[in-house]
Image 1 (cartoon, one colour):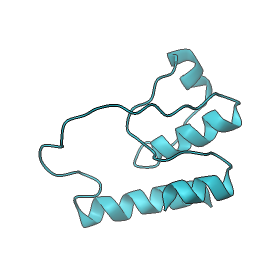
Image 2 (spheres, one colour):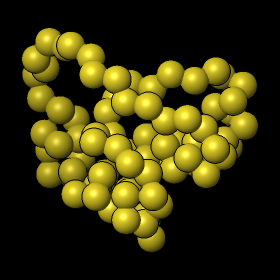
Image 3 (cartoon, one colour):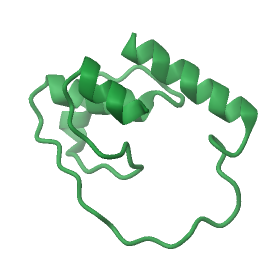
Image 4 (cartoon, one colour):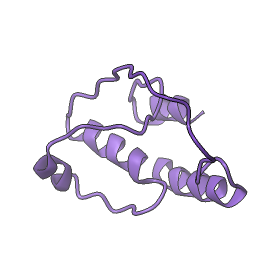
Length: 90
């Protein structure tokens, strides 16, 4: 759902808002990111897109998660993430 909203509202064509990102520290600081919670990954992708960065998805092999997600594994985490990301997409 989030990726579809990104495509429609911002024009970013992604398949997933994955957890791994690579950027030079100085360029990342220049984005002037403000969110310090669950909206940070979304804010970073939106601001990078608006700054003209090349955004590329690369498939990466990974091992299954051990334990439960702090975000989608709890009601509070899910509600917080949805609120933070909804605010950024508004």
